[in-house]
Amino acid sequence: MAEEEFIYRISTEQEWEEFQKNGSSFGAEIDKSTCYYHLSKLDQVQLTLKNFFLNVKEDLYLLQVDPKKLGDGLVYEAVDEVNSFPHFYGPEKNFVPLPLDSVVKAEKLTFTNGNFTCSFLT
Image (cartoon, rainbow, N blue to C red; front, side):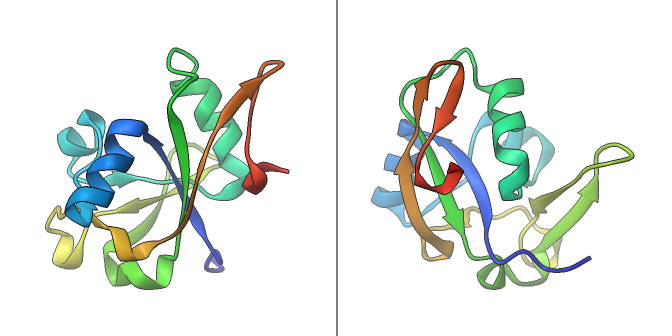
């Protein structure tokens, strides 16, 4: 599989603040319970937002992540016959927080006319 130039993390405002305060984040409950960080390729972001974040809509951020900074802890895993999603397990598959220095850029998402938008999603 060709490596993506960037991968993306949908974060709540609370998680984004944790990144900025601590320099890393263990993510949401789903990340902690599965022991890996859930990420998306750009073409998967809208579907992920619609499937898992319609109940939130406000105070969401889209983080652009440099996969090269995650090393071999980043694994692309098939979730169905069509999609494989990037998951960050951490070095040696030991669940560690996602480091802030892997985040290239963060943008606040807006929800308008049934779609989430920001400059990444043009």
